Image (cartoon, rainbow, N blue to C red):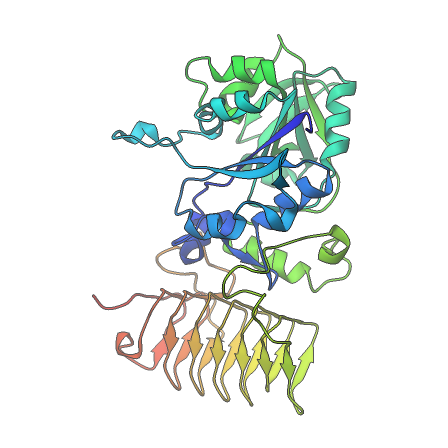
Length: 420
């Protein structure tokens, strides 16, 4: 058995992803046409030779659990390997839910002890990146570290979003700042930790150690060996609508460093309704496709450019899709136009609609911090009725029907919900 046990934190609420994260955990959000966000971390573990993974779930975990199953797509199956779903040990009190990253692992100490690993690798399931965890573990061993943290250099203006490491010339962390308003370093934590098991269990049993970045790491400084492992590859936190859209668009840019084929990314192709039962994509004569990802089961009779289509999307004749992410089984009617948008699964854009139209740059009035860059976001199963115009920075909630539209135009910056 591999001496490293993986504990994958996958219970996060994707609140800044707005309606994309309303009905699913953030790691379960579709990405890049055929994948989910969590596929990156699972594939990294597989490609690094790690084969025993505990997946800690919490927020709306059903689709995530169905996707992972027993871990077969990532070879996590066999007598000495596996992927184990670990839900919260919920009781009658709110405090029984996870109160932080360290608390989530603490509630599963029995799982760690039953595997008796030499070390534990703590990962997050909501980032887009490729990392060789074997190299990280080798660094940890060479430094004789108690804890090693994956870090990368970020722009100084972004440091207030991260835990920040201050290191010496040997990568020993000498100080730590958690989301500082004015940082002394721009080495940001990636939420990746290697712990020697004995050290981790001792830290988890200490009182009030609920979060690794806020509590465990600061408490370990100056008395334990805490090192920073520098990483300089592609990495994105896709926790906002803009970051999520940007990362998808990186797939269409050969210079971005995001290369799914070269990374050996895997997904669950047999998950119901996704890939295993899809026919090959069909591009009709007269259709136009440029710089796009067209997944299995798609039918394209119109114009698709700088966009990503998940399985089962239909683009009718005269329809135009540009700079957009279109998820599974969406239908775009004849002569409709979708520009700079994210459409969740099973959205229906009827004939003659204009989604992302207009020149106004007014941010979304309810959530200006979520949507201000001109994008439109349409929730799962929503219908946009024939001839409707949807302005920029609009949010259309899931399962809208034509009777929910008071007029034929959704203004720029508006939010539309189903009528109760």
